[in-house]
Amino acid sequence: MEIKQVEAQIEAILFTLGEAVELERIAGAVDHDLETTKKILHNMMDRYSSEERGIQLIELEGAYQLCTKPSMYETIIKITNIPKRHVLTDVLLETLSIIAYKQPITKQQIEAIRGVKSDHSVNKLVEYNLVQEVGRLDAPGRPILFGTTEEFLRYFGLQTLEDLPVMDQEKLVDFKQEAEEEVQLRLDI
Image (tube, rainbow, N blue to C red; front, side):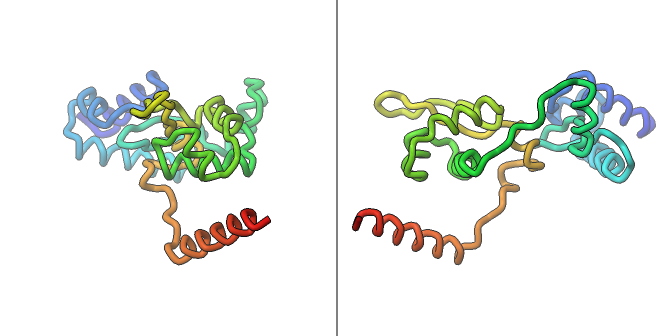
Protein backbone atom coordinates (compact mmCIF):
# COMPACT_ATOMS: atom_id res chain seq x y z
CA MET A 1 0.00 0.00 0.00
CA GLU A 2 1.32 3.44 -0.92
CA ILE A 3 2.28 5.84 1.91
CA LYS A 4 -0.15 8.52 0.63
CA GLN A 5 -3.00 6.03 0.94
CA VAL A 6 -1.96 5.13 4.52
CA GLU A 7 -1.77 8.83 5.40
CA ALA A 8 -5.28 9.32 3.95
CA GLN A 9 -6.55 6.43 6.09
CA ILE A 10 -4.94 7.94 9.20
CA GLU A 11 -6.46 11.35 8.44
CA ALA A 12 -9.89 9.75 7.99
CA ILE A 13 -9.57 7.90 11.33
CA LEU A 14 -8.45 10.96 13.28
CA PHE A 15 -10.94 13.31 11.63
CA THR A 16 -13.88 10.95 12.14
CA LEU A 17 -13.14 10.10 15.76
CA GLY A 18 -12.28 13.70 16.68
CA GLU A 19 -10.30 12.64 19.73
CA ALA A 20 -6.87 11.30 20.56
CA VAL A 21 -6.42 7.77 19.17
CA GLU A 22 -3.77 5.40 20.52
CA LEU A 23 -0.91 4.41 18.23
CA GLU A 24 -1.81 0.72 18.59
CA ARG A 25 -5.36 1.30 17.32
CA ILE A 26 -4.14 3.35 14.35
CA ALA A 27 -1.50 0.76 13.44
CA GLY A 28 -4.08 -2.02 13.59
CA ALA A 29 -6.49 -0.09 11.36
CA VAL A 30 -3.88 0.66 8.67
CA ASP A 31 -2.28 -2.81 8.86
CA HIS A 32 1.24 -1.62 9.73
CA ASP A 33 3.55 -2.25 12.67
CA LEU A 34 3.87 0.31 15.46
CA GLU A 35 7.27 1.67 14.37
CA THR A 36 6.23 2.24 10.75
CA THR A 37 2.93 3.82 11.79
CA LYS A 38 4.72 6.11 14.23
CA LYS A 39 7.15 7.22 11.50
CA ILE A 40 4.25 7.96 9.15
CA LEU A 41 2.46 9.95 11.88
CA HIS A 42 5.58 11.98 12.68
CA ASN A 43 6.16 12.72 8.99
CA MET A 44 2.55 13.92 8.81
CA MET A 45 3.10 16.06 11.93
CA ASP A 46 6.17 17.67 10.38
CA ARG A 47 4.35 18.37 7.14
CA TYR A 48 1.30 19.86 8.87
CA SER A 49 3.49 22.16 10.95
CA SER A 50 5.64 23.33 8.03
CA GLU A 51 2.74 24.05 5.67
CA GLU A 52 0.30 26.94 5.95
CA ARG A 53 -2.62 24.88 7.21
CA GLY A 54 -5.35 25.44 9.75
CA ILE A 55 -4.91 22.07 11.40
CA GLN A 56 -2.13 20.24 13.11
CA LEU A 57 -1.45 16.69 14.20
CA ILE A 58 -0.46 16.42 17.85
CA GLU A 59 0.74 13.60 20.08
CA LEU A 60 -0.74 13.17 23.55
CA GLU A 61 0.79 10.43 25.70
CA GLY A 62 1.18 7.94 22.85
CA ALA A 63 -2.09 8.91 21.14
CA TYR A 64 -2.58 11.20 18.14
CA GLN A 65 -5.19 13.81 17.34
CA LEU A 66 -6.02 16.23 14.56
CA CYS A 67 -6.87 19.64 15.93
CA THR A 68 -7.01 23.28 14.98
CA LYS A 69 -3.83 25.32 15.17
CA PRO A 70 -3.99 27.85 18.03
CA SER A 71 -3.39 30.68 15.54
CA MET A 72 -6.80 29.90 13.97
CA TYR A 73 -8.79 30.42 17.18
CA GLU A 74 -9.83 34.02 16.44
CA THR A 75 -11.12 33.01 13.01
CA ILE A 76 -13.12 30.10 14.40
CA ILE A 77 -14.87 32.14 17.09
CA LYS A 78 -16.16 34.52 14.42
CA ILE A 79 -18.24 31.75 12.90
CA THR A 80 -19.07 29.54 15.86
CA ASN A 81 -19.78 32.19 18.51
CA ILE A 82 -17.68 30.22 20.95
CA PRO A 83 -16.69 32.43 23.85
CA LYS A 84 -13.05 33.45 24.07
CA ARG A 85 -10.66 31.11 25.80
CA HIS A 86 -10.87 30.95 29.55
CA VAL A 87 -8.52 33.36 31.25
CA LEU A 88 -6.18 31.68 33.66
CA THR A 89 -5.56 34.12 36.50
CA ASP A 90 -2.47 33.95 38.69
CA VAL A 91 -4.50 32.08 41.33
CA LEU A 92 -5.72 29.52 38.78
CA LEU A 93 -2.21 29.09 37.34
CA GLU A 94 -0.77 28.63 40.83
CA THR A 95 -3.39 26.00 41.69
CA LEU A 96 -2.99 24.30 38.31
CA SER A 97 0.78 24.12 38.65
CA ILE A 98 0.46 22.52 42.09
CA ILE A 99 -1.92 19.91 40.69
CA ALA A 100 0.24 19.29 37.62
CA TYR A 101 3.42 18.70 39.61
CA LYS A 102 1.94 16.94 42.66
CA GLN A 103 -0.87 14.86 41.12
CA PRO A 104 -2.80 13.02 42.30
CA ILE A 105 -3.57 15.54 45.04
CA THR A 106 -6.50 16.48 47.28
CA LYS A 107 -7.95 19.97 47.83
CA GLN A 108 -6.70 19.83 51.41
CA GLN A 109 -3.15 19.17 50.21
CA ILE A 110 -3.44 22.03 47.68
CA GLU A 111 -4.67 24.34 50.44
CA ALA A 112 -1.78 23.31 52.70
CA ILE A 113 0.68 24.33 49.97
CA ARG A 114 -1.12 27.55 48.99
CA GLY A 115 -2.07 28.55 52.54
CA VAL A 116 -5.62 29.54 51.48
CA LYS A 117 -8.91 27.87 50.54
CA SER A 118 -8.83 26.54 47.00
CA ASP A 119 -12.41 25.40 46.36
CA HIS A 120 -13.14 28.12 43.81
CA SER A 121 -9.92 27.69 41.83
CA VAL A 122 -10.15 23.89 41.73
CA ASN A 123 -13.80 24.09 40.66
CA LYS A 124 -12.92 26.58 37.88
CA LEU A 125 -10.12 24.32 36.63
CA VAL A 126 -12.56 21.38 36.56
CA GLU A 127 -15.07 23.59 34.70
CA TYR A 128 -12.36 24.51 32.16
CA ASN A 129 -11.60 20.76 31.77
CA LEU A 130 -7.95 21.26 32.72
CA VAL A 131 -8.33 19.20 35.92
CA GLN A 132 -10.46 16.18 36.74
CA GLU A 133 -11.22 13.77 39.56
CA VAL A 134 -8.82 10.84 39.24
CA GLY A 135 -9.86 8.83 42.27
CA ARG A 136 -10.25 8.97 46.01
CA LEU A 137 -7.62 8.91 48.75
CA ASP A 138 -7.81 5.86 51.01
CA ALA A 139 -8.19 7.95 54.15
CA PRO A 140 -11.05 9.04 56.43
CA GLY A 141 -13.68 10.90 54.41
CA ARG A 142 -12.21 9.49 51.17
CA PRO A 143 -11.24 12.92 49.77
CA ILE A 144 -11.23 13.41 46.00
CA LEU A 145 -7.88 13.20 44.22
CA PHE A 146 -7.34 15.61 41.33
CA GLY A 147 -5.10 15.35 38.29
CA THR A 148 -4.70 17.04 34.93
CA THR A 149 -6.61 16.13 31.75
CA GLU A 150 -5.75 15.60 28.08
CA GLU A 151 -7.11 19.13 27.57
CA PHE A 152 -4.39 20.38 29.94
CA LEU A 153 -1.75 18.79 27.71
CA ARG A 154 -3.36 20.31 24.60
CA TYR A 155 -3.74 23.74 26.20
CA PHE A 156 -0.06 23.94 27.13
CA GLY A 157 1.26 22.12 24.05
CA LEU A 158 2.67 19.15 25.96
CA GLN A 159 2.85 15.55 24.77
CA THR A 160 3.15 14.06 28.26
CA LEU A 161 3.47 15.26 31.84
CA GLU A 162 7.18 14.49 31.60
CA ASP A 163 7.39 17.53 29.28
CA LEU A 164 6.58 19.86 32.19
CA PRO A 165 9.51 22.20 32.90
CA VAL A 166 11.87 21.02 35.61
CA MET A 167 12.76 23.60 38.22
CA ASP A 168 16.40 24.46 38.76
CA GLN A 169 17.37 22.89 42.12
CA GLU A 170 19.27 26.03 43.18
CA LYS A 171 16.16 28.15 42.63
CA LEU A 172 14.06 25.60 44.47
CA VAL A 173 16.30 25.88 47.54
CA ASP A 174 16.04 29.70 47.36
CA PHE A 175 12.23 29.55 47.05
CA LYS A 176 11.97 27.19 50.02
CA GLN A 177 14.15 29.48 52.12
CA GLU A 178 12.09 32.55 51.15
CA ALA A 179 8.86 30.69 51.94
CA GLU A 180 10.15 29.57 55.35
CA GLU A 181 11.22 33.14 56.16
CA GLU A 182 7.80 34.47 55.13
CA VAL A 183 6.00 31.88 57.26
CA GLN A 184 8.23 32.76 60.22
CA LEU A 185 7.49 36.48 59.76
CA ARG A 186 3.74 35.78 59.78
CA LEU A 187 4.07 33.65 62.91
CA ASP A 188 6.02 36.41 64.67
CA ILE A 189 3.27 38.99 64.00
